[in-house]
Image (cartoon, rainbow, N blue to C red; front, side, top):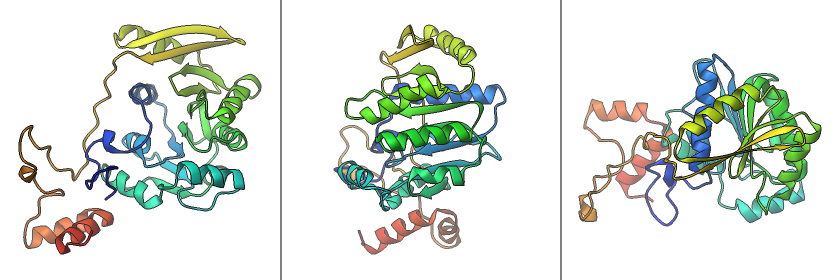
Length: 302
């Protein structure tokens, strides 16, 4: 299993998974998806750029029956151009598909549909008008983000939501230019802004904004401001001590050691193992990557 940086243990909670997924965005993801489900919107989910799986794991709870969840990432594959290769080498040297899959399978029984390669694969692999929610957190290069926004427009169903990461970070000017260009010239309508993500739609943002404003005003842990810019209502949200939504722990995580107890008191990682037929049945049911980890632990291989 993929270890938490600086330790030898696999992730036990979502917070243990490396990556950038602030509490405010966890709250907003849940709110938008709950609203879609409550209003009967059906459609697939898509994440472009997964890193080590933090937000992908979070989204992996949400597909309903007959809905597909697809993720796309270059992982350790060849970049489509020199600029993207340089970006991947600088920022994502440790990212591998195996690391992502092991993290994901710590929390879920099965993997999502995984597209390994550049995000330019998405238009050929995801049907037009099939998605209700798209999260884009891949390349920071203008040309790629421009293409990713175009792909999101095509795969979203009417009224679907796109979430664009790093729209305002100082180290991602290419994302900022592509996002605001889409708002000014390509019909994207902002719903709201968090600290690092823009939530938008190519439909009418008015009704969802009204519901979002009502939700934010009821909370005592959310700062809110509303501005007008270039004919768009811009709703800005900021956490004021928000707590993360409840998320189940890793399926095979050991119980935490009580404060003050010696490390030897910790139970062994992994599911409880029984002899005989029960052991064989467990081996048949767990994901292959977990079974390999268990076998390696028994034989002393790291």
